[in-house]
Image (cartoon, rainbow, N blue to C red; front, side, top):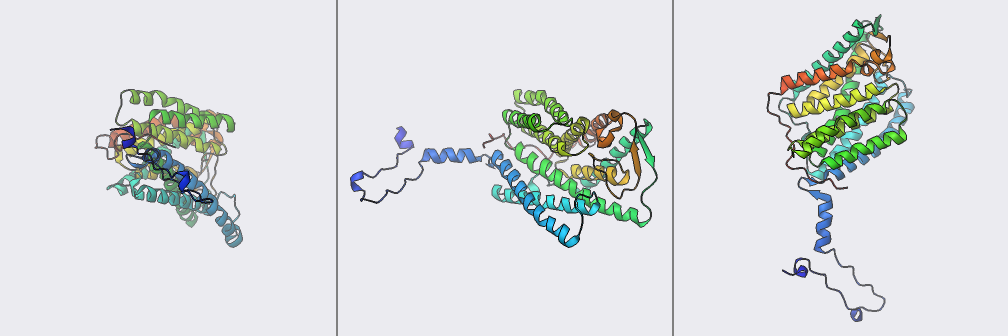
Length: 387
């Protein structure tokens, strides 16, 4: 077959046949251009994951700005709530805004990709059991950490700041707030981004994304916390390189886990009071959550763990959480001693004790769920990320 038979050249109109003053109609794209454009946009699993992630991030940002502007008028003009207060009410409103932005972005992406929202690591026949076990695990792990800090003299308990019906009221309100936090943060990272990157990432794109985060940290983030991002970035290089060399079928999932976990630590660098241990622990627990997806088949365990952990810190024990101290907490605690062990303004997450605890949580979920067949196998062979 001749080259012109495979890619026929569109016929041209001789200049003699073109009427004066009339422009000839543009010819349509040839088969070569059409095939190239299709290759750039579409892969084996639909819209390439690079474009999907870009659309998701842009939509989330735009919707967040829109909903925040509308909510600001509602809060100050109608509800008369002062913004900036660390109350349960303002936290719930803030999380609702964020949840609507993330859900709206995922819904649009799901429509474009011809998927359902539950497809993003939320399908699970045992979702209730996994969610509840995550709640139990999160509160138990946090209690173990607080107990370790207390035993070492790095945390002191004060008198309870609430009594009677206030305990139930604030407990319920903070429960709603942190359930929304778990849904939003896990929904954006461990659900949409983890699922989408898994189906399209490769080692070189993983290196590029990690490198971009590290470069942004070097140029724009001038606090101690960014070293936690660098630590997580360095920790994943050799494992991901090894998976690439042996051509493991699960390489895409773990490369995506490396990227989303590092990103999870990166976005926490903007919190007040964070230190490098707190940022690294956020990234590390993000990786543990990815492992839970691999073992349980969904993100429901991670959502429950995340919500219970934050509720235990901020409401039940009254510790700082990434520099955030909740108004209306049950117990009162004060850090003591060296910041390296007490966590200081970062709270228990900023203590060195968080590192062995995170490893312990990882071991426990592997023991509990590791013998069961994973429902979260990556989708086929990774497609190349374009865009």
